[in-house]
Structure formats: C-alpha cells, structure tokens
View 1 (cartoon, rainbow, N blue to C red):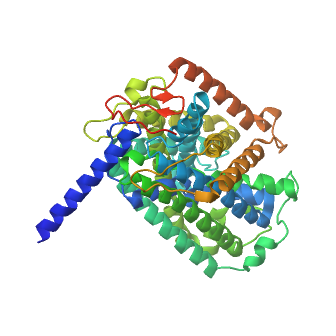
View 2: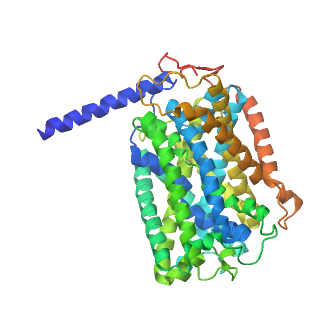
View 3: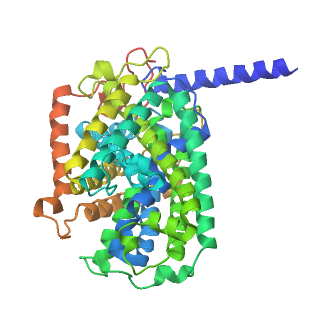
Length: 521
C-alpha cells in the first residue's frame, strides 16, 4: 500500500512539474532550470536577503545617531510603504513567474528601454549588496574571537587594518557562497533554509533575552533624542536621515521571484513568499529595535551611535551569552550574502538569456549536471570581490556606494510599479490565468499601486537628497551621481546589445525551443 502511495505522489509531482513547464512555455521560455524549491525555500530567499539580523546590526548606529530613540518611528513608516510595493510585486510576480524578477516584470509592463533598465538597476544594486553584506563579517567575527583579525590589530572598519581585514573576510565569504551556488539549487536551498531557521530562532530568542534584561519601558520610543545631537539636528531633518536605516533593511523581498523557474507552483507560492518575507522582516525588526532600546545599558554615553546593537547585546546579556547571539548574527550574514548572490545570478541569467547583457552566450548557459546557471554566479562573485577592494582605501566611500545600492534597487521597483499603474489604468491584468492561481489585488489594485508609486518617489528623493554631514561636496551628491552613471552605462549596454530577444511591443514572443503560445499584457 505504501508503494502505491509513493508512486501516486511521484506521479502527482511529475504532473505538477509538467504543468509548471507548460505554464513557463506560455510565457516564452523552455524549462531549463531544476524545479526543486518549495514554499519554505521561496520564503527563505526573500527573508535572508533582507536578513534583519545582518542589516539591523549594521545600520542601527545610523538610525540612532540621526534620530535618537525616536528613530524607531521611521521603521513602521518605511515598512508600510515597502509593503505597498511588495503587494504590487507579488501580483506582477504571480502573473509572470519567470526567473529574473524585476527584469522580467519590468519588460512586461514597459516596452523598450525602461523595462530593461529596471533589471539593469537591480543587477548593479544586487552586486553592490553582495559586497555590503559580506563586509559585515568584520563588525562581528573579531568581536567573537581575536584570531579573526588576520591583518593588523585594529578591527575597526574605519582603520587601515580593519578595512584590509574586512576585504579578506568578505572575499573569503563570497568565494564560499559562489561555490555553494555552483553546487546546485538544492544545495543552496538546504544551506539557505537552515540559515533562515537559525536566524528566525535567533531573532525570537534575542528579543526575549533583551526584554528580560530591559532597564526601561517601551515608552522609550517616545522619549527625546538622547546622546550627542547629529549635524542635522534633532528635528524632522534628523528623522528623515534616520529613515535611511529601515530603507537599507527593508528591500530585496522580491528575491523569491528570481527563483520562480526553480519553484514548484510559482504562481501560488511566489506572491506568498514575497509578502511573508516583508511582513516577517517588518514585525521582527520592529520588535528587535524596541527590545534593544529597552535593554541598552545607556542611552546617553554615545555608544549606541558608534557601536550599535553589538554594544547592547554584549552589555545587557554579558560576554558569554552575547557572543552566542553574535555567532548567530555571523551565520545570518553568511546566508544573507548567499541569498543576494543567488538572486543576482538568476537575474543576470534571465537578462543574458534574452541577449540583454554582454557575454550573453556564456552567462545564459545552464550546467547540464546541476541544471543551474554557473557563469552568472561566478561573475557576480568576482564583481562583488572587486567592490570589496574599494573599502580598503576609503571606508566612507564604501558606505556611500552601499547607500547608492539602496537607491538603485528602489528605483528599479519604482520603474515596475509605475509601469504597472500605467497598464492597470488601461485594464491590466485582465482575465486571470487558466490555472486560476494568480494573486490579485482586486478592486484595491489602483489605490495600492498609486500608493506604491508615490511612496517610491518619496523614498528615492529622501535617499538621494544631499545632506551636509561634514563630508566633501562630491560625497553629498554621490548617490545621485552614481545613479546617473549607472543609467548612462545602461544606455550604452542597451544600445550595444540592442533589444532583448522576445521583447515586442506589448506581446510575449517565445524563446527558442519554447511553445508557440503567447500571453498578451
């Protein structure tokens, strides 16, 4: 009887795989990648990209330095805005479950360059984000054990020794994540799933431990600014600058969409994974910030503005228990780097498959053994290691480049949501898929779409706004200039590669070897 059940289960799985392959063919591509991922792995892809343990630990200092305890209120504002974006991306991702997420969605709601640009901006932002995540190891590992400081004696990221060691640790991590990606999607998903479960457990336990060691109540988030005032003062200008912290944390939730061709029943699973990732990150991050403010040994000694959560964890929980949690944070950094690189490699593969990147022939090749794109993972890893070297000579420049990555990714989101709004006003998405599994915003679609567009404009304006924080003039304008440079380079690449194969005015044309069916926008 058990054998019959197993056989039936295998037959059902095979039928589902065939159905997914046929659905992909209607969107213009043949099934080349291996469908091995379920709902947990899809959720893990988005959650580990956001990785609140990694990013909140990295950027808590910025939020507190500019906004004091009241910077907490920037978190729910940014979360609600990004949730509006995520709802729209979940809908378009369900309609077009194709590897490459933002690129594929962008070119289906825009014709020509704007759609391609969405993918290009996200790809550049992802490559920088791989480096930014990897470099976070320097803020954690030397605190766990002095032996991780392999070069020199000063672990501070702003010192020459610390910057050099950060490049070494970060490059080692990128080499490791590249090897995992090359091993195949099943190996990657296994590592990612285990890492996310460890991070979720660590977040829950850390919040609980900090609340048990709280020295003040939750009303701390209503208190005046503590510590030395920032150069922007303690008013609205300071809070707007502090919003850079949650803006840095709460992006990348679309990564589940990049693995759509490796996920079973993607029309159903991908939108759920996107929304679960943003909600889990938003709620977990908010609770972590409040718990940290309640448990911080001091709000006025300036250490929250310089050492951030590491100071709170070790100071409140003691060196032994504190280091246990820091080890979990280090694991989260590794998984975060892996998730970002995986998403970036699938995005590069998707663009190359359409002939939309230089070296498309190599980047679009799928390994016959693992059925995963190996060359894009290597390329993303190599470029990220090159970005790490920037930190060696000028740590402040690396911070600005990381800030630019946030700007680039959110601009790619804005291109998609604005294109969706234009299409929606013309009747998109129209009739549902024949499979009946498409996620839809229904009657709330136009309102939520408009909210996402307005929010994207406001967020980008805030990130790009030049702030006089003591740096030179070119540093104040660096994020805006970096976007201009990225767009200009994109224009040149788009002209060189001409129009991506399959891109036609408002129609889907099958890739070579795919079904001749097409799906209208």
